[in-house]
Every structure is written in C-alpha cells, then in structure tokens.
Length: 222
Image (cartoon, rainbow, N blue to C red; front, side, top):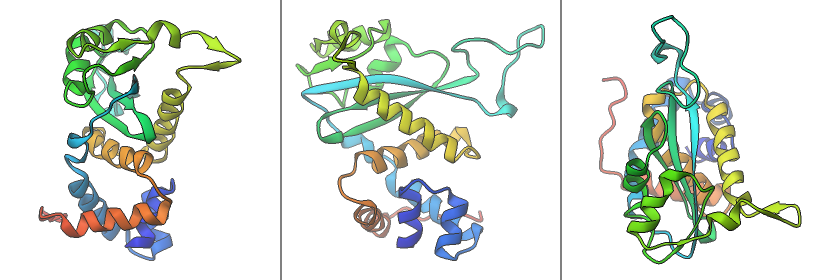
C-alpha cells in the first residue's frame, strides 16, 4: 500500500500506481475510496494567517452533464457547465481547495468557503475579483489586490497561487477519468499532496497513518 500511495502522491495515475504496486485495478479503486474517507473533512481544521492568496479554478463538467441552450449549443463562459474550485494558499505552503459548485464564483460562495479558514486581520493577495470583497470586509483583511496585479522585476505577486492552480490543473488532467461529482474528494487529496511537508515517502506514511486511524467502514462493492 505504501508503494501505491507513493506513486499516487508523486503524480502517477491510479492505473499506473496499481501496476507499480502489483495490485489489481479493483483493489486500487478500493484503496482510493479508503483514501477519500481518511481525508474527508481534513481541510476543516486549516486556519490561514499572515499573507494569504486566494483565487478560483474552473474545470469543465463531464460530457454527460453538459447543459445546452435552447438552440442546442453549449453555454459559453463561466456557465453551469464548469465546476468552480476556490483555492487558497498560506505561509509554509498551507493549501486549501474547496469546491464551490457549478457556475461562476460569487461573494456568498467565497465567504462560505473561507470565512472559517482565514484569520481576521490577515493580508489577502488576490486578483481584484469582485467576489472577494465581502470576505475582505467581513474578516477585516488587509487588501493587497491592487499591488498584486502589477509585475516587479518580471515576477507577479500572484505567482505562488498561479503555480498552485497550474499544479491543480495537471493533477485533474492526470486523473481525467474522475467523477466530477467526487471532485471534493480529489481536491482533498490534492491539498494534502501539495500542502503536506516532507517527501513522497513521508507523505505516504502520514496518509497510511490516517488510513489506519479512519473509523469509517468502506464497502467498495456495495
């Protein structure tokens, strides 16, 4: 199982990880269900302070759930055919990824995602999206959005969160067969992988420890 987890945490697909661990795909999928159960609610206790970056990342809905307009064409832009994930990054790579749902982000969604996870008085670094301002007001955050959009010495203040979003995009592409209705489970895994200190083996050992302590019974074949 450690070998399987190391492969999953180093950017290998579940299929390739099963081959590396010499287990069947059925067993690999069962173990993934156990991983999801162990990481459920894991982000609930995260509290970010100091300089905190936030942004949104959108992923196209599965072909089977795409909604068409009356003329049979797909909706353009940030429609209900895209899943929105609110992302946040704090000091020491503390990371969060919360699925807001389908469609464009809103002030209410951003506030609901982060109101319990960003400490009042922190500094918010963002891209000036209108949906962020209610969060800034409610938590009395210092607004560094205006400065973040300018580049100094060829680098943007938003580079850390942009790299986080880029890694997330690679992660979702790697597991492109995922059920988007289980997107939060996959985001829990991504946030653990990205934000957990240590190398792949240390992360796998911590994840195995969480699996052993998880009291939820997983019956994959039910």
